[in-house]
Image (tube, rainbow, N blue to C red; front, side, top):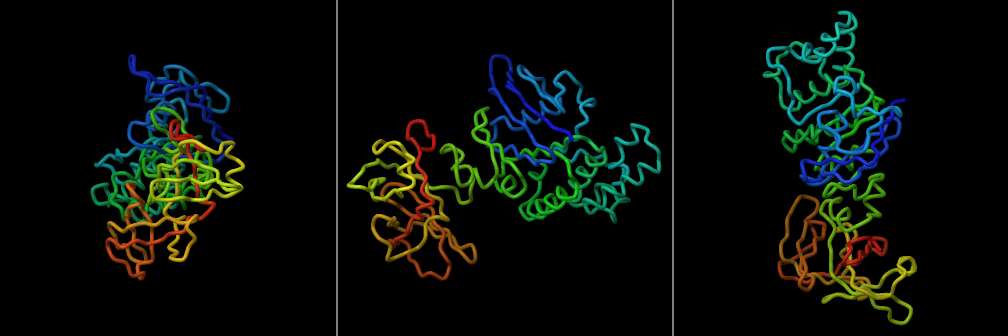
Length: 361
């Protein structure tokens, strides 16, 4: 089966290096998401795989064969861009079949392939419509169908949903999840939206500043982030960070801040290898549980600053000393702005990062 591998990939624009030794290997039929903020290098990496950007150093392999020297048309890759790039004068069927007609495939084969991919993306009833008569989500599905029709080894997606509104994005995300179950191919998906990455990908590659920060399954990255950046980037609402100092008292290790003193679980303190030092304590909102009777060493006392009602839950922005902390609370829980609430910290939800290097401890 097709396999793609990046080895020590470097990209420079003049004297400016934007990618720093990218190493990545994708397994058979794997859906890999490259995710990170704008300017992190994710789209540049994808464009180098596609052949739209030259490789400064390193190599790209497809089935163990180097392809960096090949033109895009010779790489047997299909790409879906942020813009739909459809031909407005052609109907859906002709847009989907454009590459096949250029290859002079038999008419019966083209028609069969168009029907097949139209069924996969739910466009069968729209084959004779022009792009102007379609919604944004439908036009993006045409672009995806056109890519699928090529029977390529690898499918590349460059932020395909970013032009859609929130409702359509959610709908298309679900449709993409269904499509990838039907199309057993390697897919590389670039997005700045961590929710897209978490819900669609087998493996997430988090990038920042031209480096891969961490790669792994969504669950691994969420539960065991390598560093503070990954911890803060994945998760909605994002992880809370509090400055603290480690101090051992008797047999218990504590993280002590200006308004809290949290006991570190024995299992985690054994892994640390240190019993003092400046750290950043990380706790996700989902690991803070409203518990008025929680013991001091397992809880944070938070003063409510802002309450955002979002239905079944409210998202609260609270003060913990001089720091802000976000928590989630059932909407029926009575609260008042300025009130101090106690939240228990789930022991398994405690993350510690070196304050200087920002690496996980």
